[in-house]
Length: 137
Picture 1: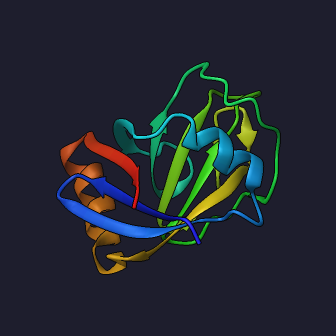
Picture 2: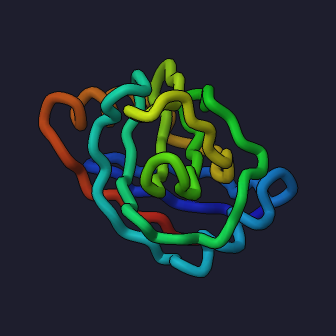
């Protein structure tokens, strides 16, 4: 199982890539690692933070996609109706944009540090953008 470390704001999380369920998304994202960005709070989706990626094209379609990621799940929206983005759920999420309902590829599951995920989300909501980085462990 390929492990990943995610540092977001003041918190460190660890988890794994969903190699069997989203192999193309994992492979495409790994080409961009180590990956660094900024998370901001979602606008329409509920309790989540996201990394806006504009027109960045990962070259993948939909696989293992969901509209309802659970806390600690990270999804990649490969673009189309809305801009490309990463989304990390910290609570209840119904993934959407101003264009309506979306679904994204669940390709990372965080398993360690989850006791801090809600605090990360709320800090992002009330304090603003936070740094985020992804690296293979």
